[in-house]
Amino acid sequence: MQRLTGVQRLVEKAALRFLDADQRAIYMEWKKTLQMTYQPEKLRQLTKYIGKLSDEGTILDFNDEFNVFSSVYPEYELDKYAEILAANGIAWTEASMRKADVSSLSERAALALLMGLFRANFFSDGVLDQWCRDGVVDAWLERLKALDAAREREPEMADVVALKMILRYGDREETLEITTSELFISEQLDASSSVTHHYTFGKGLMSEISEQILEEVRTALLVDGWGGPGVKPNGASYAYTLAALCADGTTIERSGDYDRVNMPEEAWKNVIAVIRPFWGCLGSGISSPWAVL
Image (cartoon, rainbow, N blue to C red; front, side, top):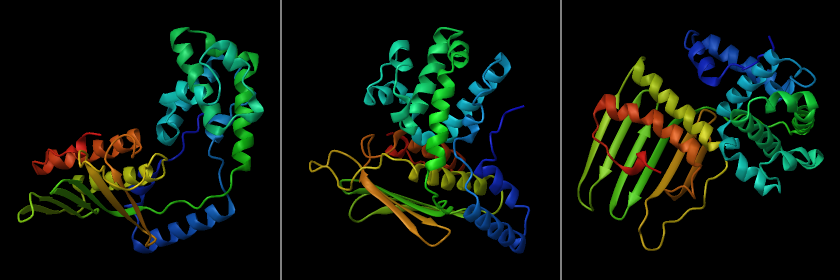
């Protein structure tokens, strides 16, 4: 079996709950040392199929793993494969994709070619098999492997342990502050009145949801698409400020207009998707545009 989906961070964090403080410290030191001495290839989940796409079972495994990869790394925005290809002078046609200059492909463009091929196979079954056996897919994977090998070692972003989000519209202001044990929700109704909800929780469902929120925020912060600061002059839009405190003591801040232009849309929708359970479970009554982008 060729599948290698990897252990996702939430699974790792769930397992760490069974360790005491000393054991966690040992584990984190070991992980830090491992990251300093060995940087696993990010794209190995795909490139390990080079030279092996000759039978239907392996091709199906490759298809499944690519789907997992695209969901684990939303920053590539591979659902926009046609736009990515067009930006690289490639049309979503057989002739254009086959003659693409492999040597000049960027990582995102090569992945978009793969996504385009999978989508083409959805509409015309058998295309994927043919392109795999023709060696076209191997050429794209070889390019990804070369880019992977040349990738500079990047330190892993620390866990986000606290989050503060502020949404403003005119005189109104809503604030969400989240840790794994507390949640503050406040709304400034006008210049002289506000309402605040404060919740605390121990281990259990709410703590797990808050941990998921913080993890999704971490993922979103790694994605491109954050715009510049500033509210539109006519005041017709919401403006946001986001501050994420990381476990290493650093704070990452983002701000700007709360819209699709100034935020990574898909990654932020994932954040909102895990925030919604707070609203339902706690009955905070918030119906703010946090839920709409």
